[in-house]
Image (cartoon, rainbow, N blue to C red; front, side):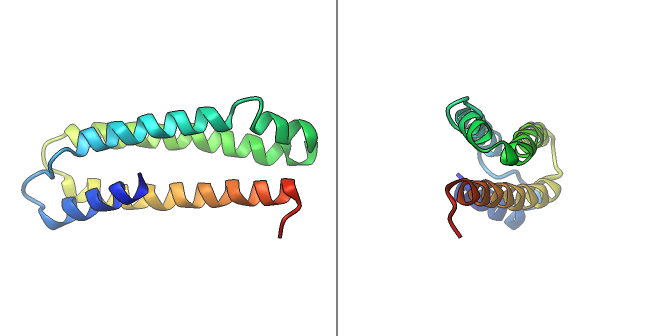
Length: 120
């Protein structure tokens, strides 16, 4: 999905006068994928297990869950911007930033898992 976001960013950046085809549809799909992905992580058997078996990681789990909510709010904001006339340059820049934020968040989740499993 992040690769598709990158493609949308490039398409929006290439043509400032006309909207790229389907940015709203792609952002809808992204928001749906993020919701499903985050719901799976927040399941008691995933984050719940980590926090339950290693209470010292509970703060990191809570932080990641808060980040999920913020990322979903941002995805919704991007979806709204995709419907606005013009402004595709701004949308392109915000999508690029969002991609960076999602990648950084995934890296934090990977660090949590490494810590939980005692991996370097």
